[in-house]
Image 1: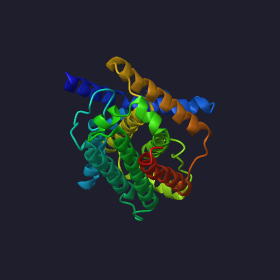
Image 2 (image 1 turned 120 degrees about the horizontal axis):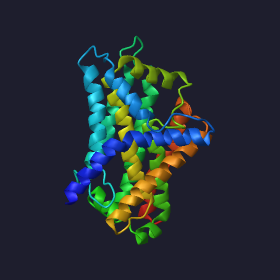
Image 3 (image 1 turned 90 degrees about the vertical axis):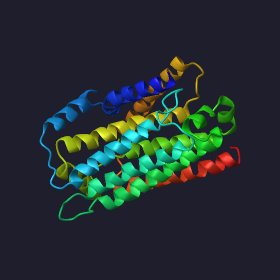
Length: 300
């Protein structure tokens, strides 16, 4: 039964992740006083792209989008959703979670290099951002494993009881905030969506130009899925676990709604971060995340 619930949660996540991305964009427009697109716009964009003809020229052009999407799916399969363990839960599954996140970023950087006459323009700083995102997520994960005292992600999150949160409140707050910043940066949401600078614009244009139709749809859907998955993890780090399964599932969904509203608020009022400033912001979040395991070690 537990396995069936886990797979049902995965199917629900696969269906609703574009809706959550649309919700974040809608909240950003709402707090900024704009009309904005509807929450279903991501579904329309994916459907439009799926109907178009792709621009695949070489074999690698199909491998990169498939690799990004596969890594995002693997990240979802290794992430606990609510009280249930992940579909691929086993002792040491956090290592597979890390591999999935890093693999997705590797394929993402490869997509940004593109086939242009100036390969790599805009992808260099994207590679730095990707490295900082991975280090931030891994350090936050190390804090969870240390505080929760578990050998798997599900066991570690289950160990984040009220007593543990009270004893390690500073370390968990630092890890939660840094992980939330990494989630927004990884998903390209505001304020990490600025394309005014030449480097991020060239990286974005390389993806839009070299991939079209179903390939570009896979890349965009992978971004929606990654935002949903990392958002679920951020919620479970920040909010205490509930004993009853229905209530704990409601905690995750309600927490995602609050996370989406806060992300929209940040996107509406925080200044847009261009290439250099986004690296500095991620560097600060990375430093905070790296400090959190030491804060847990000294029980703060």
